[in-house]
Every structure is written in C-alpha cells, then in structure tokens.
Amino acid sequence: MTQTQIAQNNKIATRAVKEVYAVSRLVREARGVLEGSFPLLWVEGEISNLAMPASGHIYFTLKDEAAQVRCAMFRMRNRALRFTPEKGMHVLMRVRVTLYEGRGEFQLVVEHMEEAGEGALQRAFEALKHRLGQAGLFDQAHKKTLPVLPKCIGVVSSPDGAAVHDVLTVLKRRFASVPVVLYPVAVQGAGSAAQIAQVIALADARQECDVLIIGRGGGSLEDLWSFNEEVVAQAIFECDLPIISAVGHEVDFTIADFVADVRAATPSAAAELAVPDGAIWLSQLQTHCQQLGQLLNHRMQQNQQALDHAAVRLRHPQLQINAQNQHLSGLAVRLTKSMQQRIAMGKNQVSLLGKGVQANTPKAVISKNKTTLMHCQQKLEATILQKVNQSKSTLAVQIRTLAVVSPLNTLERGYSITTRPNGAVIHDAKIVSAGDEVVVKLQRGELSCKVN
Image 1: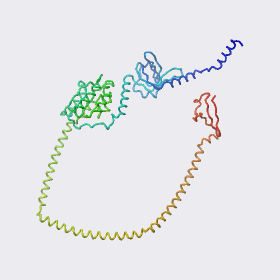
Image 2: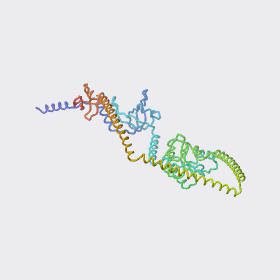
Image 3: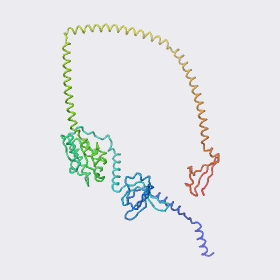
C-alpha cells in the first residue's frame, strides 16, 4: 500500500470519529458555561435602545465608551423599580450573565436596577446603618431622656442656615426665658463631618447646656451626607448630653437620626420637643395656685372645726380616770368569760381527737386501703383492655389505608417508577439526555437502562 493510500485511509477514519454539534446543543452548552462562570454581579452603564412593550418586560442596551451589551428585565422584577428607566439614563444594575438561545445572543438578565450616583450613596448608607446597628449604637437601652425644662439649649448647625432661624423662632415663642448657645459648624462639604463631631465633643466637655439640637435644613442625600458619616455617629453615641437630631425634612432619615436620643422631623419640631409650651405652663401654674389657695382655706376650716370639737369634749382629769377604771373592770369580766369558754372548747377538741384516733387505728386503715386497692385494680384492668381493643381497631384501619396508597399496588398493576442511579425520581423526559443511565423499578426487581 502506498503512502498516498495510507493518508487517504487515515483521513477517512478521522472524519468517521468527528463529533458534530447541533446549533441548539452548542448554544445550550455555551449558555451553561457562561452562567456557571459568572455569579450575580453589579454592572454600571448608560441605557440606549430602550423598549418597553405591553408585556411588561423591559429590553435595552447597556453601554459605555468602549462596549455595549443587550439586557432584559422581566415583569416580575420591574414591579420593584422606584423610577422609570429612560434612554440616556446612567444606571447601576445587579445582573445574571446568560445567553439567549433563540438568537444565540449574549445578554444580561437584570435582577435589580437603580440610578447611579445617589444609588451608590444609598448603598453606603444602608451598609453603615447595618454595621452600626449590629454594633449596638441604635439600641433603645442607650437612649437618654430629655429634660422636662432645660436650663440651657445648645444648637449645633450652620449660623447662616434657615434651620437655626426656625429653632430660635420656635424657642422664643414657646419658652423665651431658656437661654440658647449656638455652636457654629459647616453642615455640608469636605471636612464638615469631622467639624460636627468635634463641636459635639466640645459641647459635651463644657457641660454648659443640658440638651443639644443638631441638624440642618432639607436637601438631597448628598447634601445631608455629613450626618451619615461614622465619625458623627460615634460622637453622638459617646456624648453624655441628650441629643435631638433634626436633619432635613420629615421624609429624610440619616444615621444621626438613628443614633440620637430623639429624632425630630424638622428643626422646628426639634425646638418643639426641647422645651414645653410656656403658655400652657403659665396656665397650669395659675390653676395650681388657685387649687393651693382653696386647699389652704379648706385645711384652716377643718382645723378650726377640730379645735371647736376639742373644746366641747374637754373634761376634768378625774372624770377621765373614773371612765378608764370602769372600762378596765369590764375588760376583766370579759377576759374571765373568754378563758372559761376557751377551756371548754379545748375539752371538746380532746374528746373529738380521741374518737378520731379510735377510728383511724392501723387495722381499720389497712382494711380501707385494701378495698380501695381492689377497686383501682379492677378499673385499671378494664382501662387496659379498652385501650388494647382501640389500638387494634386503629391499626387495622391504618393497614387498610396504607394498602390503598402503597406504591406497590401501583406497580402490581403494571406501572413502574423511573429514577436516576442516586434515587432521584424522573418526572419529565426533558430533564434527561441521550446516554444518561436510569433505573426502572417494577413490582419485582428493577432494570438498569440507558437513554437512547
């Protein structure tokens, strides 16, 4: 045989053993490789080619300066969206990497979507909130009670902000006599968080106030971020003075709100919480004064009446002695009668106890206990027999029920159960592939089979 013939024969043999992939198999296996190689991950980019059909699903392209990828967010996930996606919007998404078999197209399936930028701040906020909560900074046990009427109020805020004006206006209206100390700080921008923490520590060291209000007016999450810094949270937690947090509007929540002893919806609300209403206190004071005057008048009248009664009842000491002697004689007679009655009762009790001893001799007690024991034994035997009969009846019913639902009866009628070698039951032919080994269980015995 020539070298040419040998080469041709080898070429034919090589062709015979080549494995040819169907397109669907290739795409399916490629999808498996992709999904197995990438866990859930975060991707950031710009939305383009946005499509929102009536089905409720969302289809779009996510792109950056160098690349783009197709994305799909299905209706069940869309319900959790807190905004409407738009073309050109910059978003942050948690996705699964996959491959759409119908077109053999690489794509991302979106599990969660949020706007980039503020969304990142929100995640940082939630992470710090969780960590500080685990560390115990939010525990109710650490919260201090506000004084009913503070001697002095400290305000930690920007001196140029509307929050200070609102606090001072409310304090003046409610209780103008309480002095206020302003601790000026920057409430946003670089270094503002450290400055706020330092001023809180300073006010705590001076102890010139007995309650602190810290806060500022409303703004975006980024504007309020100084009050979401850990250094501010630690300063609030370590401060011995009770602190009212009043950051932003009613819908705004910061880490400072959770650590502070009391959270106020607005700076004005913080001032409302810091002092009582002076008008109400004045009204209550007037009422108390009136009540006190009435009480004093009533007490004087009572004392005068008591004095009058005492004057009427005043008698000579000898008359009092005679009355006491007469009372003492009566008590002596009652004591003698009482002793006689007590002795008679004691004799009756001794007589009754003697009769009781005779009735409770060991012989009488043993006879009575034997009779009781006989009755108990008879009752126990009857109860045991009844329980045995009930158990037999219950067992017979359960045996019949088990026979009805037993898989062995199904197998006896010619049916079989197909499982994988590890015992997992196969309910659907789609979950097995050619070449898989299966076990077919019959009424008697089982068959080891291979799927063609």
